[in-house]
Amino acid sequence: MELDGETVMAGARDTVASLLLGSVAPDRYRRSAASGHPRAPLCMMGVCFECLVEIDGQTNQQGCLVRVRDGMRIRRQIPEAGRS
Ligand code: FES
Image (cartoon, rainbow, N blue to C red; front, side, top):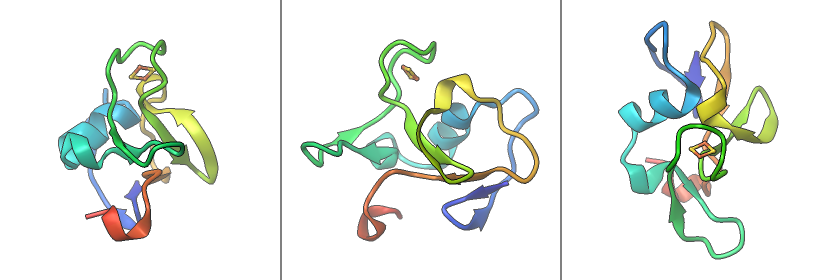
């Protein structure tokens, strides 16, 4: 699968959120569209909506509820300059 255009490996039981938490610092997970502040997954069970990511071109997907799969394209919802 791809994360921000880079090939990454995931475990068979990873969700998109768990993959990202293992790949980037929590303050680099995403940015609030309203305030620009860093946000990261909190509940990991579909309640808080802090884990939003773009998956296969669809924005605002709850990363904690989606299992990773081969060929998936994941993009953090964060300005290009802050992706690293
Ligand atoms: S981490 Fe709370 S909804 Fe995904």
